[in-house]
Image 1 (cartoon, rainbow, N blue to C red):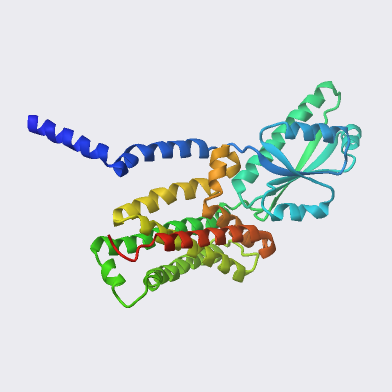
Image 2: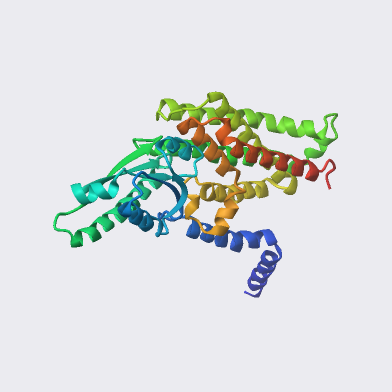
Length: 368
């Protein structure tokens, strides 16, 4: 029994001295509960909306104030004409536009009915539905207050239009996200494991002693995964197009170009991971746990970024998949060109350049 107790104590000592084990035991659960607790929510808050008030009268102003007084909406754009509607949705920041008809108050008081048009960006169908329901509930509450002092009931009719995804098909939303998740995880994971395997088996020293330069060795490792990752992305794209009928409204060449940039990005990240690890197990752990959760939870793939607290919204800016998903959805569903998505493309190129520079600096041409 004393021997057994001594072995147990010895094992505790080993665990307490191994920082990586402690990180897995305590750091991972804390990080996961914080991410899941704050990122996963069905409520929508601080959604950017636009308002086109063609009436500018008493009831339209009161109803606007009631809508903007909630935590659900933030006024991002005050529109002045219907010609501005298309541009307001192109950049992806405006989730919904509310249009008040001309003579809104006059129609409501004289005819007993007035109309509001709600136009939602349905590239994210769940968010669009939720925001439309919020506006409907606020409008219903306002008409209920008006009818307290009226002999004849007043009614505000809501006309809803879902742009870019009128049938609210969830597959329109998931295909770009699945491409991002697959490329980010598989490309980074396979590249980092491949190079870490050479280190672990001791064959990296043989490769470095060969006539090939270090960058040629890295490129030889990366090129097969670049081709395979591109094939994976094209398979998902073709299945989405011909099986689930996801449209590609924009330029196919631009879409492929954006995909190639993003494919190169996790490959460079995989090289960076391989420069700081020595074993395949560590590379796998970092690739899966260090990339999977942030990519799924903080990229906007499943949960709207607007719902998250400020620290997580700030962290989401350094998640490359966030910018890729925005760009791909904009090309496929909105038909946007490079002039619209240039910011997302520039950010991804910046990430790619950063990972390459850091990887080159950290790559050791001599093994220790």
